[in-house]
Image (cartoon, rainbow, N blue to C red; front, side, top):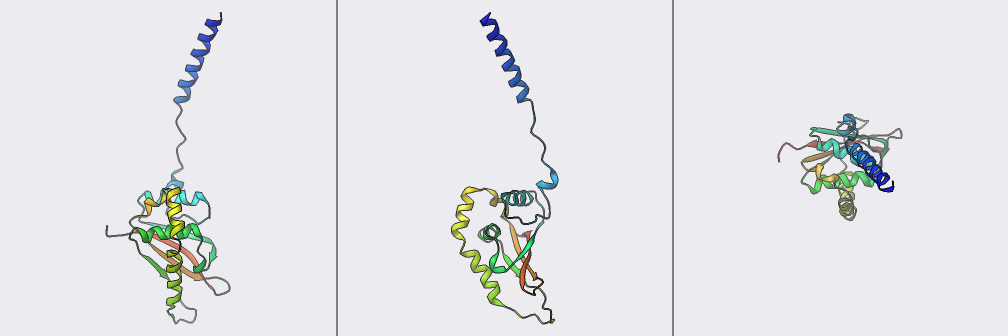
Amino acid sequence: MTSKSALHALVLFCLLGTLGACTTPPELNKSEVSSPVVAFIDLDKFDHALAASLASGLNTVEVPFHERVSPNKIPERMKVWLNHVEKNGGRIQVQEPPSPSGVTAKNPFLIFSIVNALKTLNDLQVKAAQEKNFFSNIKGHDAKVILGYNADKEIVVDKVILTKTTTP
């Protein structure tokens, strides 16, 4: 009887294994996979969403910030993405907000401070590239950092727009 029980157990195990192999993984929500707007949240989920949107072939992906930060205090996670834009031959432009007085004063130190902050994160960039493979999708994109004013009339980052470059 024991060999018969063992045979029944083996058949049952094989049937369960076969049924388990037939299940298909759930389909991904297409709106999460490739969205033209990926709001910045300092979580790994942001990296996944941005990488998926860039890989999908969208011409423009907009990254609005929920919390307005100074251009000198761009979150590390976003700095890594911007570093990869530059590393892969893309351009980073900074668009200042219009002056409330109507006169636009050019502040080269603001632009230099953003570029300098991006360049100082080389070690973080290398570490992040080793840990994640999201950044391969940033190749062929330019970034535009759009600045605005907060309620205290301080210049803050409004959003970052990643755009496919027209030349290879």
